[in-house]
Image 1 (cartoon, rainbow, N blue to C red):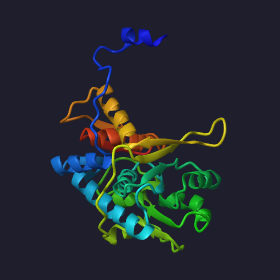
Image 2 (image 1 turned 45 degrees about the horizontal axis):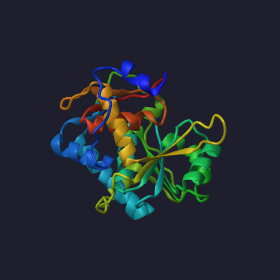
Image 3 (image 1 turned 30 degrees about the horizontal axis):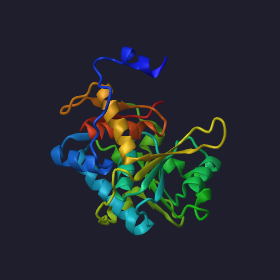
Image 4 (image 1 turned 180 degrees about the horizontal axis):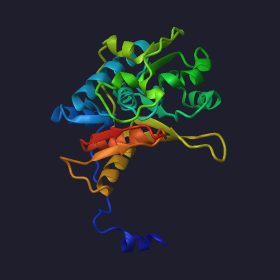
Length: 276
């Protein structure tokens, strides 16, 4: 098929071009929280997190990242967890710092993580507590800060859904230098500096699987991700408001931020669970 043939097969209900807002991804969350503060942004095993609370906690975490971890414009932060509110919160917290999110799969082991750390230049990681075993060897050898998230902290409502031991596990105390719990990071209540990001700024590095060699980082700006979010929303036939609820059940590190970006852009609700 040649480019000249595309118009003959392109779905008639979809436009052939996109008009995309010239805004950052963080700005999208600010607008959504201002317009619909009480609307659920995520539903995690029947526990809800509103847009206002998502913004508030992301700002708290951003303040900690800036003032305790030295995260500023362009700084890379590794992010790894199962589908959870903390993944979405951490993603936007890094963006609030004008930093760069480096999402990695929770199935990666230490040797693979060392490559992502060295190649991206990340010295801070936000990870689920059950994954720390694979990061421990990197502390002091490239990683200087690690924030450990506990899934059960966000299981605030009764649910009839089956919970794995990993999801229901209580918070574990880790006393290693440079390691802090998610709850302590939020409790520090640091105020972040005003955001200065622009649409053309780098905001995420997503790594390839490394099938033919070492994984390579794919560089994404706010603008390029915005095109993906808007295009995905249009392809799904969404109209705002009220848009549909997105469901995220995949284990891949790209699934949650991908769904979350579309959901926040269109003020939707992200229903999350971990595929078993």
